[in-house]
Image 1 (cartoon, one colour):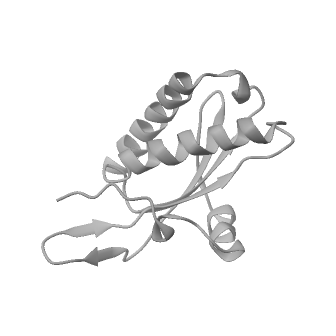
Image 2 (spheres, rainbow, N blue to C red):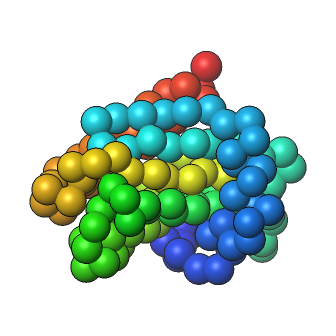
Length: 128
């Protein structure tokens, strides 16, 4: 059974976690997003029946890019929700999501569509 949780284990928490991703990232970009990812070795956690790759998400939403806290929080919620629903299709990675200027003009649907495209790109790249 697949669980769609987004808990503490699903997040990059310490500056060290972020630094690992920033040190040697694979970049994925779109018009409003830049994703930095690093593959994680040996991240398979076994519970009773299945093996789950633990992906972790970090957000770096700069005040310089999105002025209003309300908008920053809305964008973060959209990213977290999209990640939560798609994390089981993604390979075992740590990722940091950064945004570009103009994202606060997008509605939630557009943000989700852009993220879906990026998830598909990541999945395609890691199949090869």
